[in-house]
Amino acid sequence: MKSFSRRRMLTAGIAAAAGAAGVIAAPKVVRRFGLAAPDCAGPYGPGEALTYAASRIIAPNAMAREFSRSWISKEPFANSLYGPIPAEFTKHKAEGFANWKIAVGGMVMHPTEFSVPDLKQMGRSSQITEVACEEGWSYIAEWIGTPLALVLQEVQPLAPARYLVYTSMRDGLWDSIDMHDARHPQTLLTWGMNDGDLPFGFGGPLRMRLPKQLGYRNVKYVHKMVFTDSLKGFGKGMGSANPEYGYSWYAGI
Ligand SMILES: Nc1nc2c(c(=O)[nH]1)N[C@H]1C(S)=C(S)[C@@H](COP(=O)(O)O)O[C@H]1N2
Ligand SMILES: [Mo]
Image (cartoon, rainbow, N blue to C red):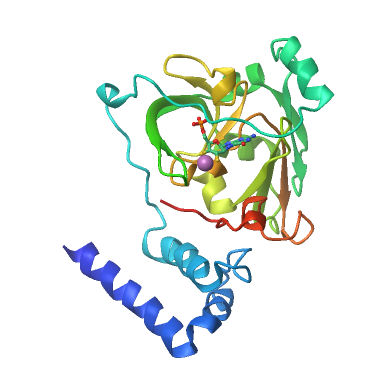
């Protein structure tokens, strides 16, 4: 009850602040608090800015819902992939991804390449959570992987690092999260699903899993991660490929 009224008060507060400043000026308000979403100047503008800021202010430790085993979907749906397949990816696929590595660099003390066995050795966590596509469908699966927080401990991001940009080798899909989401206990570099290896169709050998965010942020076949203090130099500077197509960067659920 207490937290509910506190939430209402804070929501009202943020809305009032935004209202007072004019909805168009909302991004300015959140920028003042250091919570500007990188795409807040884009089409989602004020709405996007408020969702991101509100989730950090009201529920900084919110967890995605976890389900019991009986909720696991009998027929999980692997979405289609688009675009040409680079030769480098075809080669890895032919090798059964035995030589797959993820390179972690940018603003870190120790730039490192990790193989999937390296990650498995580092640590393991599992969760039964839902993948929700922005198109409306969803499914529940058990996801098994290495908490990204453990990778951060290894590479040691430098103090100015604010975002982590991660990229797929398959189609170049890229996205970014802030340091808060990078350290979130449910953020996994996923290599397993439903008690087995992560199947190819679901992003195997390695997939970013962010159960608190929409499906498209859960990039498959990740091979590169870069810590940065600014997203300006990446694509059109809106934090991911998605806002370039009109989707929101933060996409919290
Ligand atoms: N590399 C890559 N990752 C991707 C996509 C993609 O096209 N390429 N599609 C995204 C979208 S839009 C969704 S909804 C989810 C779908 O996950 P699923 O195939 O496990 O259902 O994967 C995301 N990850
Ligand atoms: Mo999606």
